[in-house]
Length: 277
Image 1 (cartoon, rainbow, N blue to C red):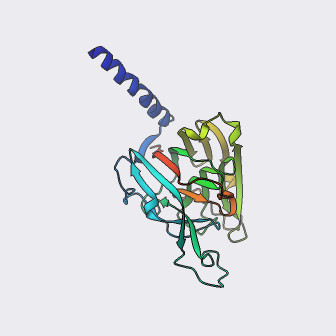
Image 2: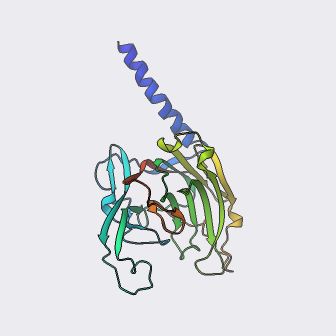
Image 3: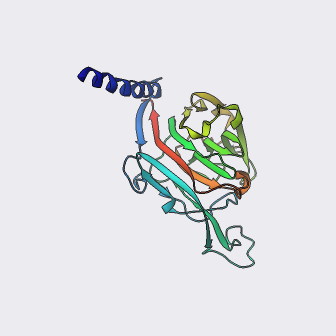
């Protein structure tokens, strides 16, 4: 009986050990992680919340109560609601103010001002809902300069049946990005793909950025090509970046959520950052 227990424990440990060895291959060492093992709100030492209507004409109102840690996972839940928009201004032309009602709520959390990293291996294990209108993302932004001159890396982004891996830098026009994008149609993956957890990874050093899902390379861009095209010679990927996790709905890219049944979830098992000495 004791022998059987020992064997069972070894079988549980070996995959974990193998995964850790893979994560640290190439001389990487863990420098920060959130395993979401404490029930309740996300750890305020790591994460802050966005609030309200934020970007991209998206349909959701971001609020803290839609993100909770339970069972060793972060759960960001999108809900369909009908609430008054506290910022509503009749006859306004501002997209955030002209909406009389809030039709969806969700959460967006980030490590800005709390945790930022320059170079490394960034890993997120998670499960995303892929129904119409949903727009989950695991991404980073640089700490200096306005978007997109601060640099954006979409390690995981999904919308309209596409899994995307994007990198953006600035151009001579304010708020206009130069994109280096790649995407995979979801139907190129195995059936029931969205019902399972997957691992997204970024390897980023002073030479290049490589983006993966389940060790499949989705995008690779050399840093020499990512200098802002505004004459400043500033490379936004030679500065620290902070991490964002969010579940958006609709907006410029998300698609039409009207026929999707809510609530929907973006579940995160862990986020880890590794660096070389």
